[in-house]
Length: 331
Image (cartoon, rainbow, N blue to C red):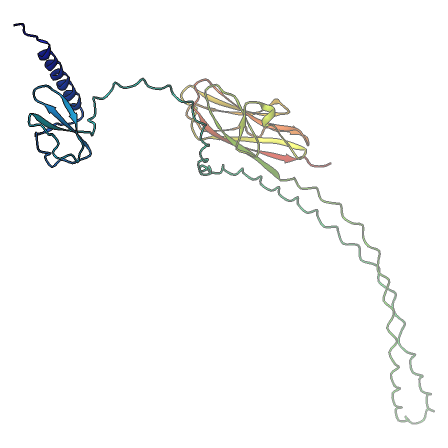
């Protein structure tokens, strides 16, 4: 008798399919099983209700309300939860390209202003000129001649007639005094004397011209402005016009820091851009100098400035100066 292996092969295939199906559902959740003939009180609609034959592997899907779930005793009821189980995370995607740059934000508000710097020192005012001396007073006029004498007093009384000489008669009474004569008119005033000569004009007072500036030293020539605390690299920029005709004299310089050993500053008055020779030098440890009574003539509108010319190694300093402008005396 020949035996056929086909039924056992079919059963094996069904078992394999059952195992694969159960394994696939196992990815969705943990399996629960109940013996055949009982529903296990599981009517949850979130489960798949199956009956699986233990011998053939046949699978039958049952309703959640079926009683019993599995009719045949050789079958096992299987409940498979339908809630999915998260699979492994996929690989990170490639970063997207950068988006375009956003518009520029509005400008920030301006910061608060800094505190005001200290004011520079005031220029030195010119001293007022002294008043000229008064002229000498004129001499008094000569005294006029005396007026004529007034008329004499009234006429003398008439002498009494001499009595006949006989015996001496009684003395006659004295005649009354005549009335006094009228006062004569006053004499005419004499002519005024000639006025005295005018006294000589007094000398005019001098005007003080002054200024100053910070100097960098080190062979850098600067030109200092008269009447201000300022200096300039160009002489024409520092030039100031004079307001009257006269003479400049007595230049005096004072530095806050001495030039240094072997160093010096030379200071020269320029008129209309030309060195006048009204000058003085501050050397080494000294801080002052003066020109003495050197006179330089100027007329209204001439420009004046002070040149400061240091040697190469001279220290930086602050220079202040003054000089006198004497007004010319009119003839």
